Structures are given as structure tokens and as C-alpha cells.
Length: 340
Image 1: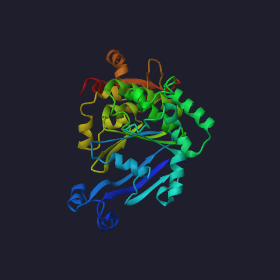
Image 2 (image 1 turned 120 degrees about the vertical axis):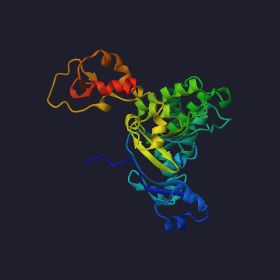
Image 3 (image 1 turned 90 degrees about the vertical axis):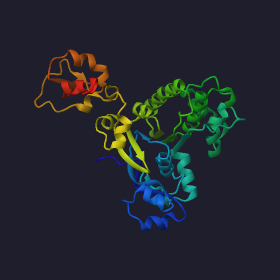
Image 4 (image 1 turned 30 degrees about the vertical axis):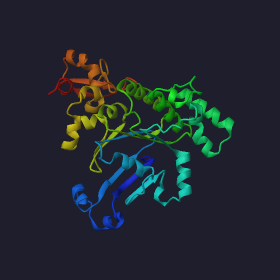
């Protein structure tokens, strides 16, 4: 039986305007973004259905105004939705009282935004411990937990620094540590690295992947940077005009863009850097030897030399246990590596 998603959104609308609920009751789902705008309303989120599974990193991306931040604010109920349903762990979050919603956020949700939002007159340790203080934990317990996550994000030795004494990347690490202090099951991150210079941003992406490898959180991550999305995501949802144009794995989005809009996002991407061997794998027909097989989890770019020198029409593919799992068409793989 398939596992139930941690977050499930069904036919979610968020309309901004004078009387959005009444307006939504008068229109159909096929109303375009521009038609709604002409009526004096803005469809921040338009009829979106999406699931997020345990331990998954879903990256939501799109240009400015596409609805990605609005959608995440709906998923965490920072915005009340105009229509549809959103459940977290099978609980309809729109039915929660304010007290229940606060408890849900305190116990299950961590949030990191583009602006670091640090308290300037508190040290790193005090900033990280702040949500635990709000939760009512005693001073010793919150200090120990804060020190633990400070070590986790690589800021050990800077516990008594103030935010003004830290670099931009270090400040962002404090924000990440603060959100981790409450040990959230679900982590919402809204363009957390976009204010950083490229080198620090790259370092933070590496650090973030390390943290996810250790912690296995369920993550919804917003970015407008496609390279960042490709690097971090288990799945990518690309938004335009409040709607999801395509939601799939990075290699499937690059190989099979669903719309012209998605294709424009992917046209400059070096496909061999993104696509795994197993993404283009096909059945073997009958069992064959896994000798000289390619590992399915390798990027095509990493096996390009083997593809170029191997003369077989079909090359076997194996998993990390060296078990044969399929084969790839060598010409098809080379077309992706070098361009058709």
C-alpha cells in the first residue's frame, strides 16, 4: 500500500481581492489568470493539487510573481486559502483553531526565509534558543539543544557572537539552526540563499545537502534558480501564473518538459549533468551479465568516456549492490551527452 503523503493539497486556490470566496464560487477552474485579473482579482494560487512525501525535498520554482511563495504560505497556513483543502499528516489545517495551528507550527514546522530575521541584540546561542524559549523550555534544556544544532550547522565557537559580527552565510546558518532547534518534521524554506553571493550560496547548498542527508526532513524549498533546484531537489514543481506547469524529477523535467514554458527553463541546461543513467534505462529482455555495467545512479556526464569507447549497442546497468537492473541504448545516451 502506498504511503500517505505528509502534506496533501487538493484544488487549492488563493485569490486576492474584495470578496474572493464569493468570486471563486462564480467562476470555473478554466478561467485564465488574465481573465481573473481583468475582474479585479489576483490568483496567487490557481487550482493546485500536489503531495509532499516523507523525507522528500520538493523544490518549487518559478519567476517572480509565479505564486511559489504564496503556495508555501498556504501549505503552512500563513495564508488562509480561498478554496480547496490542505492536510498535514491527514489533518485538515483549515479546520484548526488558532491555538491548534500555533501548536502545529511549534511542534512540526520549521521555517526559513530570505531575510534572516535574527534578533540583533541577542547572541547566536540566544537567537537559536529563542523558539525553545517561546515554547517554555527551561534554560538548561534549550541551551543544550541550541548548542547541538549550532555544531550541526558548523558555527561552533561563534555561540557568543552577535549577528553584526557574522558574514551573510553565517547569519543564514543561524537562521537554519534556529528553525532546526524545534526538531521539525516539515521544513519550509523560502529562497533562503538568494541574498548570498554565488560562492557562499554554493557552500550553503553543499551544507544543506549534508544536513538533509543526516536529518531526512520533509522539505519544501522555494527558489527562482533552476541550477539550485536541479542540485537540491528530489522533485521540482515549476509554477506560472499561480499554477503548476509540471512536477517531476529533475531528469524527467530536463528530458521531457511538459510545456513550452518548462522547455524554456531547461533549454540551457547541460542534460548530461542532470540525467542519471537509470533515467533512460530500459528492460534487458532476458537476464545478462552485469560485467562492465554502468551504475544506474551515475550522471551521464560521469560515464561519458565509457559511453564513447564502448562499442556495444546496449550497455547493461546495475544498482549499487551490483545487481543487473536494465540496459541503456548507447546511441540514445550519447545523443544526450553530446547533443542530438
